[in-house]
Image 1 (tube, rainbow, N blue to C red):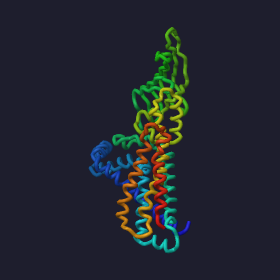
Image 2 (cartoon, helix red, strand yellow; image 1 turned 90 degrees about the horizontal axis):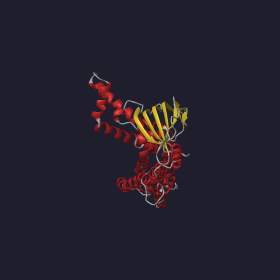
Image 3 (tube, rainbow, N blue to C red; image 1 turned 45 degrees about the vertical axis):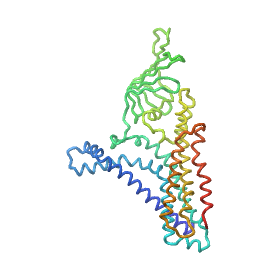
Image 4 (cartoon, rainbow, N blue to C red; image 1 turned 180 degrees about the vertical axis):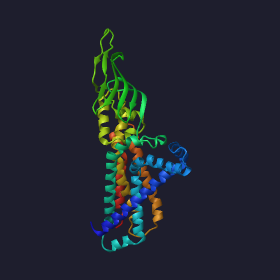
Length: 373
């Protein structure tokens, strides 16, 4: 990489990092300012009978504990705006110091300036994908917390869990530990096609081993009419598509959006094998899975669409260029988020999620060819 490429790439990366830190700081500061009483109330319980300044410091610690995993999710949402903003600041600085004129005078194309910007942007989008697949799924339990759960890293337990698995069996758990993935007091009822009870399965405890539920004191009992006084038979394990991930997804709204591509693929495969899966639920999982690809591609395409507003052969008022660029950037990025999440009547989700990309591709080509160099 030549000196010019290194200089532009470093300047663009530094602007992107500073811009993201500023935006993340503004978001957390606004949340703390509007919900200061709630954070102080939580800290007051943890630092009871302590001086006020210790409780104030404790409220900040509660804020940090709640928001540090959300910063990874914030990176995914803000990256498109950060890329456009960093590109605008970088090229504005180059226009102000007449660096673009010097590059043109040396006989080089302005597209040469865009190359390091796009390479760094591609690297940041790759990091966005790794963040989505490796980090956010591990932090998914922490992302379900609200302010009342701040300071705790566990999801806790839920009582009286009642669900139906893909085979139509009714699962009831007296208590389900979301962290240990164990059930206390399990009852399972199997039914025939008419909905009549055929088999009852009970266990004092059940633990998920990755593929099935391992039962403690498990028993299965024939409850069909005419079975008489059938003796319960021991049962060591129970296979079902109702695993801890599915239970968490049904318990917490938006939990599925934080799962990895592989986890969503497994959920979709199991859901298609079940006759009880609602089509809208299956489409939603597909949009979660493919929508992140649409957002990543739209981030790069939006950067190309906005590039001609700042990469100019002659000096211009960069404030006016920013005002012209803002609607295009906001419209493209918000359209990508909404288009990848919204259902389009008559189109399968595998196609509808990529409608924003289809729209942005010709706009990006038109933007690049409009640059005078």
